[in-house]
Amino acid sequence: MSTLSEQILRACEGEFVDRKVDRAYVHDGTGVLTLEAFEKISDHIENPGQTYVIFDHITPSNNSTTATLQAELREFALDRGLFFSDIGGGICHQVMGEDVVLPGEVVVGADSHTCTLGAFGAFATGVGATDMAAVWASGETWFRVPETIEVNLSGRLRGPAEAKDAALTYVGRLGMDGATYRALEFTGAGAGRLSMDERMTFCNLAVETGAKTGLFYADQVTCAYLAANGRTGTVQEQQDCRYERTIGIDLGDIVPVVAEPPRVDSVRPVADLEGLPLDQVFVGTCTNGRYEDLARFAAIVKGRKVSVRTIIAPASREVLKSAVNSGVAADLLEAGCTLLPPGCGPCIGMHMGVIGEGEICLSTANRNFRNRMGVGGQIYLASVATAAESALRGVLTEPGNAL
Amino acid sequence: MKIEGKAVCIGPDIDTDIIIAGRYLRTKDRRIWSEHVLEDLDPTLAPRLEGAVIVAGSNFGCGSSREQAPVALKEAGVRCIVAPSFARIFYRNAINIGLPLAECEVSCHDGDLVSADLEAGIVEVSGKQYRTRPLSPRMLEILNAGGLVGLWKVKG
Image (cartoon, rainbow over all chains, first blue to last red; front, side):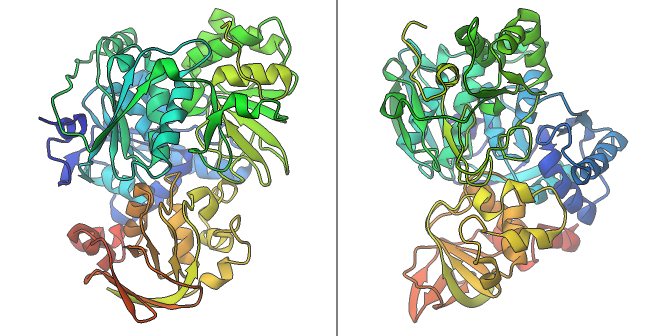
């Protein structure tokens, strides 16, 4: 009996295996070094149809150095017939989720948050540029089949608590290296009740515990999402397998939380820090930039005005289109929010919302490391509802139970 | 593979943003990375890394997959990193670019002489020996070729 990772990699935990890669993707940040390494080892791309170049990190480019690096990568991708998503298409993990990935696939991305796609029941993990160059050339890579920690979810989220609060809660419990070299599996009746957007939030944070990936078993929710996007998936069954350990989380017990800088596992109830003055609120990223997130934020701020500068970056063009068509985008603008083009926004402190010395940003992203969004600034991580209530008041605020 | 150098000791959970900040990533100029390596931890550190062995706490290299992190350390002259554990993407990246890692916990002070024999799986600090978690044969093969690009050139 096998864990989901063992089923997909067709080997037992601890074994080293070479496996064909079903999907391989880079973004404008990691693609440059990948191309540099690739040109040293080969001139041949083994599977151009399964190789993806997705611009998301600095889009549109912020200066001519970036523009020149992007131009080289763009030309290469188009020249070699790779799948190419230019500026404005969205964040690589989101685009791969919307358009490409299927349950049971082996997916590597040159970005640590590739684990987001475990939400589809794929074995999806981040690699570096040189590993990716070898994947371009050979179509395969090696893995050590990970041991698995089961995160058993029961109950259902209540009141203002979100998937993000539950995800930060498991990161806090496991710690920043609590799952190093391992996989997380999210199981139980609570897992089945989560939407695909929520599952992607859960899996996105797996790497913040050191995990190689986080996975949900594909079920009817997965298959319905795939069908709505023109794809067909099959349901995966949990077997009576051996987990290294199991932690249980009752979703009904989850309360709004924040992760204090500079550690993602430094998780406390929002109530403990209420009133913390904020300089900026940022909603977006591969963690919380999906349509459900934007709609939730808009529902809270609709008809009112934010009292601190508030930046919203949709995770993809599809998300932005949905927000425009449903009126969510108009509600955000009316409330005084600044809408960015689809992409990573200021998450890594490169452009469009870098914070200054001594400033505090409340962010729905996944990392609050020192100086990440700007030298001398601090990042608190929270849910969308916490971000919305806090944006309205200008200070950290626990979202109301009236939601 | 035998390595020797003076210890530079740093703490646990050193993330890749701290190793090389996002603001220095948009270039292919490796000197920029080596000049600014670990700048946000200690701006005086980079010049002291030439010929050094970094002795760190657990979970070294957590966070982003940016390969510029191990490249910056290697370009700055770091010969090896010794830590009780490494984040897995950093671990693969470091080996792939030919930066040796030794997974073990040692007692050490700044400036102590550290030697590592990765084939034997032994790190020695001030005459005391520590056993490392062994590198897999594949990892050793990549390291001995100077990295994955070197191995590709040999094996094709």
